[in-house]
Image 1 (spheres, rainbow, N blue to C red):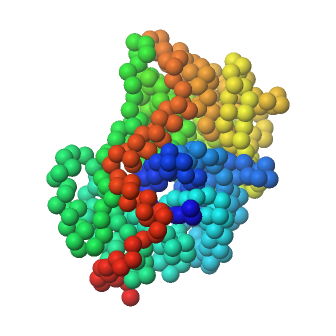
Image 2 (image 1 turned 60 degrees about the vertical axis):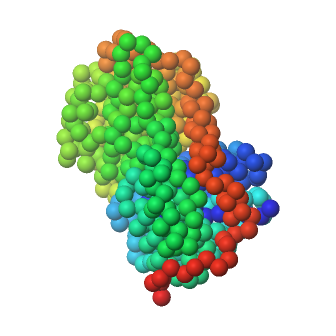
Length: 510
């Protein structure tokens, strides 16, 4: 078998990532050797994987999740191009796991032909090694202003002769118009590869949807392969932090007598906000993303997450009054946690001639350290112990490093004995992403936060295992695909490609 499939979407956040993961998990259950692939991702939520040469590399967090759905280790080839926005006008370009350039909209176009070559070569390699490669598109395949240089959506589908399924989010409204319009804006050769549709995030009576599904098939000549329901438990490993609502996850009732309220500051260039997901898996922990100083003042614990633009986001904290609210918390001995860029913001000073080019700026001054940015990017897996001797694993992605100062105590310690992170009273910081996926350390930290905030009735639940929660999520995705999609039809697409003779939907691209 040498099959493939492209999961495209009518919009960003239509559900391509979760549908791709669900199809991957379903195929794995059939005994198929399957791999995920996203030619180009634009996201600041990334994971670190180790390549064949032993070096760490970055890929989109969603592709790491999809690899887990396939039951295989994640690798840089699953997401050969990753764009990490640092502002509204520029992004860092990561190719096969390594940061190679910084581009804006103007000069990125000139880079595209080289990136397309890397993408197609990588895809072709994977296709020789796996029975099926399930590809995830980006944005919409009907972005006709970008079609001539596209290698992510139908440009990839044409290269690999991939049958394409278009996913639409009915929760946004207008899903039938979006699906029809997606096909009708494509030229004949692209339309020939679009085999049908999947409706995502449906709530209500399935029968009420059927007239629209029937009409969509009449006007496009293409079936809808199923309707996936909206589900409360699908929130882990979001590709974009904007996909989160105000409350993260679905908090279970507390194990003790009190809740612990956690406020995560939604920075403008937030990076790897997925760190907060591990906290949200604990019963009795309510995690909210916020930009309101009042929420920061009221919460039991405040988290400053990672940032792709540490100095610019620090300025935003000051402009919005959030910095003052955070400082008042620290002065009162109420817990504050900084992760990666958020940790760097807690320093006395930041010396940055690399990311922002602003030179030396004052940090929040809540930890007695200074941070200096280095052009060389640290991208590595990390492991060690907490101050209480608990095992901790995580990963690092950052340009800044602690260059001066000595906090009263490190928060973590590498296996080789080097200190990492800091604790000064109720203020905590670490460069390690993913550390709170280590169950013992997470429970210890939340217990400390509860003690410092006066929540004496809060108790962690000893049975919470983050890895098991993630695995249940992947199994749920596979279950939804098996139950709600026409898997026989999907199998035929994977084996044989798009059906011949699909009708042309006018007007089509010229």
